[in-house]
Length: 234
Image: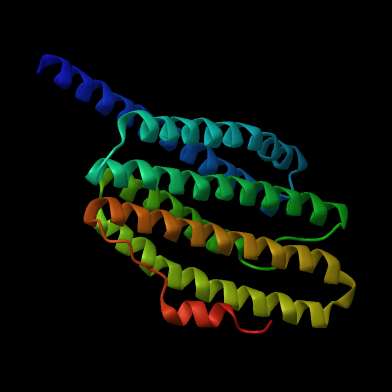
């Protein structure tokens, strides 16, 4: 009996360690997004390069956490709530890794616009970036706290991000018409808002998994309307 209790305590400790490692990975990814956004707004090449160099750290954590999850599956054969938790963490780290990749992509856009002697302050990037970061942060917190209220908040903010994306996209297209000599840096700017919108999408994925851990029900939070609108021709 005591041996079984000890094994359970060791197992619970391993799960807690996994969660802490995943949170550390998410924290790095959020910092990367914040720094990449600042690099883009200020066209700061040094900061952009710092973000790019952090990508290896995210990738190492992704592989490390996945390996630990696979080991738990092999040795502990988790069931019920434990199975949902470990399986969800494997899915979440994929989204976190992609957020890190998108931060790197944002940093590279900053370099491209700077190379073209372009401007990044012609549209309101900071607002959509702030909302995307808020969604990512709240999605991770929903997982930490097992909080369905935060899941709902992520779902609601997604609508604001989608609307901002459409507005800024149209502003960029109009600027391209008015200033055809700036079409290349503006094209990179359009790519940047697409990256920010994709970060919001990954936040929704994480929120869905957080809700799954709590309820055992896996459902899509994305509204049917947003799916149809995102497929509009540009």
